[in-house]
Length: 120
Image (cartoon, rainbow, N blue to C red):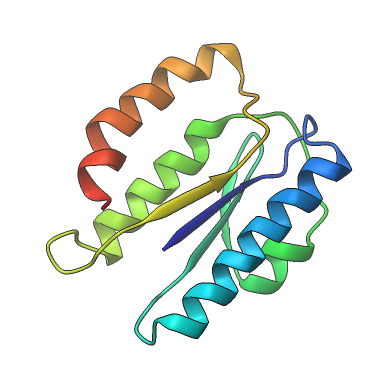
């Protein structure tokens, strides 16, 4: 399971709190109901970073929004560690929907050509 969270400046405190709550509930549900689930945490603003659970929920960094950085990182991790032939790959992103205008076409391409073919 990939948990992606937008931590950009456009996310006000209420949106960040909602994103954290959603991700926390998803994390708790998965841990309680599935024994063999691996969770990859990715935070993103202008850059994406794979982080541990503690940093995912409690780090305070912020910047602009470039969603493709998180999608590209997810694709790289899937290709290197979670072959769709051997794993059921899922993803959830918490965001306010804001993105740098010139990044949206790249996001569409990454979703269409890499992410959607790999996930359940």
